[in-house]
Length: 265
Image (cartoon, rainbow, N blue to C red; front, side, top):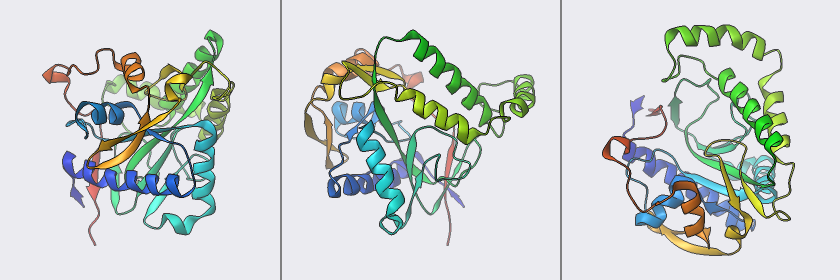
């Protein structure tokens, strides 16, 4: 295996993004660049230089349609893999990822055959509901504690030993069942009929106004055109504040602690 540099990860993950674009255009699925990828597109039409992944989002109905198409047409995904908790053994997240074969992802998270990938987030409706947020947060924390296979970067050895013992009790309820429960809970409110919406199922957590997704612009990202929300300015201000201002130098680093390897042969 050959460890990949950040620019190589970006180039290979862009191939995955183009595959998502192909599927969505062929099957008329709505999607948009999201989070750091949207931010990079607006700032400079490309990756944030230190960003180590790509994010897209879809309204819940389109998200479920995308998953169904990928699951029902495996031949269409030749060279790629849908990572989804209902179809991928040991998959550790409530969101979905499209992964590319020929690579190996190494992190403190339990393994499930991930290669170079793109994160796909569902957008669900939302109302000011503190009970729902509290419930979702509790479920996400439990899942986060279940999926560590080795010491997370921010954990001391003692904290990780305690976590290892706690995992025995967490796993009385299987991970897949917990993921399904979190996924269903996030769908309490419909995307189309509510004033608020957002990615409430996983990080980057965001509560946004649904009207910001009314309308789509085509925008240049890494030399190709991709859809973004028409009201991206309001959306990015909500998520990042003064989003055109670069963070301090010491914060211009990848957000995730992982290594990616290119498989030989």
